[in-house]
Amino acid sequence: MAVGAEFIEFIKDQMSGFAPVAVRRMFGGAGVSYVGVTFAIIVDETLYLKEGPDNAADFDAESLERFSYSAKNRRRVEMSYRRAPSRLMDDMDEMTLWCRKAYEAAVNARR
Picture 1 (cartoon, rainbow, N blue to C red):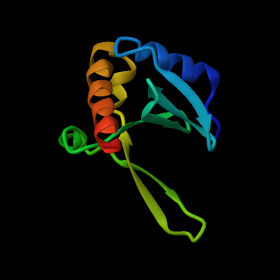
Picture 2 (picture 1 turned 90 degrees about the vertical axis):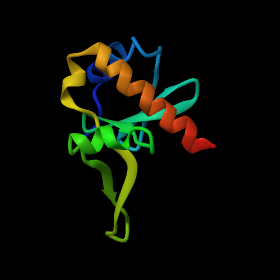
Picture 3 (picture 1 turned 180 degrees about the vertical axis):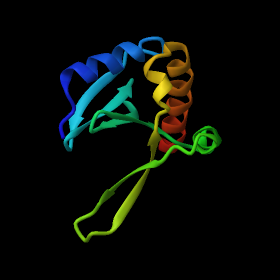
């Protein structure tokens, strides 16, 4: 399922407290970035945020699953993105906090 333009605009609005993010469509989903650093992805209108050592406990505390997909060889591949808590869709302040941590995780992963 493709990501709808309306959902992309909603996510951009919800993240506006963090930064003016860019969203680029890719592989049937979309990547969310700030100053060229991708810190979130959208797949099937579900938001996933970058996980790193400093925010993994936040995801673990809420039992939020990792994004995964089936590779061509039918092997399951997990990525370092985890589902965002659904409450972030209604709380811009908390969305800002989670985006900051996800952005920091993405920056640190590039090093």
